[in-house]
Amino acid sequence: MVVGRPDVQGREAILRVHTKKVPLGDNVDLSVLARGTPGLAGADLANVVNEAALNAARQNRKVVMMVDFEVAKDKILMGAERRSMILSDKEKRMTAYHEAGHALVAAVLPNADPLHKVTIIPRGMALGVTMQLPMDDKHSYSKDYLEAEIAILMGGRIAEEKYIRQMTTGAGNDIERATDLARKMVCEWGMSELGPLSFGKKEEQIFLGREIAQHRDYSEETAIRIDEQVKKVVQGGYDTASHIIDERSDALVTIAEALLERELLDGAEVMQIINGETLAPLAAPEPKNPEGRTQHVIRPEGGRRLPGLSEGETPQPA
Image 1 (cartoon, rainbow, N blue to C red):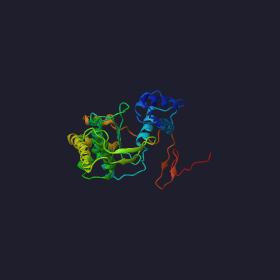
Image 2: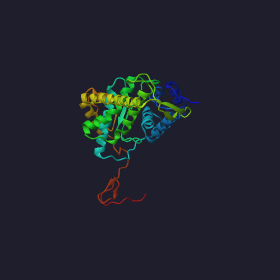
Image 3: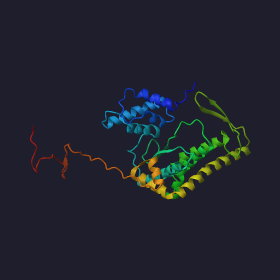
Image 4: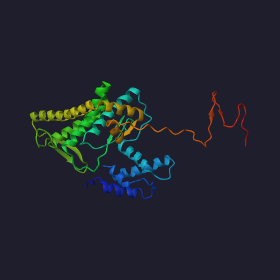
């Protein structure tokens, strides 16, 4: 028996169950959070609530705010941040331009899901992440949408080629996903010049949802034509992304440089850059020693001098 993932109303109901005993801030809107967590199962949503509560506790807050849920959602959807992973300046620049290529194409194409965030902070196994969130739950996908997805996947490799003058292994997963998507379009969904035909009968265990074996029920000549169509679909996405990046090269450079400076941009900030607007300056970091706390002065010889004592004076025991 296969249990489907909850829809937006189901996710909201699940969140209400898991937040029943969690003190929430006034700005928390569970309906907005439910719309921003497509594809998450009940256990994932429970994890989001737990991570949000932990983040609020780390900030010494008595209630969980919406910003805590955003941090938790990003951790679940994009992976945990690996700030301990040190990248060289060259690798960081390559990652910034790679992700800027994805982000620019995703923000421009009308048939793609809206751009949510792009970051060059290593998360999970990735050096950078470009994340999109659909406006509504999707149960079927159009050909235009799938072609846009392939173009977005190609955007990172094109940015590397044009601005770094290198091909890196960072595009490996993008190429694999684009090829797999194109092959499904040709062999399963009839979205190619070969017509509405299905190629390759599969044997699967339905309760696992995994492919066990695939029988080749087509000729050698048809196999060659399938390969040609797969390449044509991927090349079409490559050409679309290349055209967008050539047309908006200034925006791509600005996005990449902003990522190097800020490490994270949301979809609204990327659209500001594309529209030629200037981003708001970064907020000044909070002082490490706010007023009211005892400040220890580090002396050149390595000792500490407590405030209020003159040079050479020693503190007396209480």
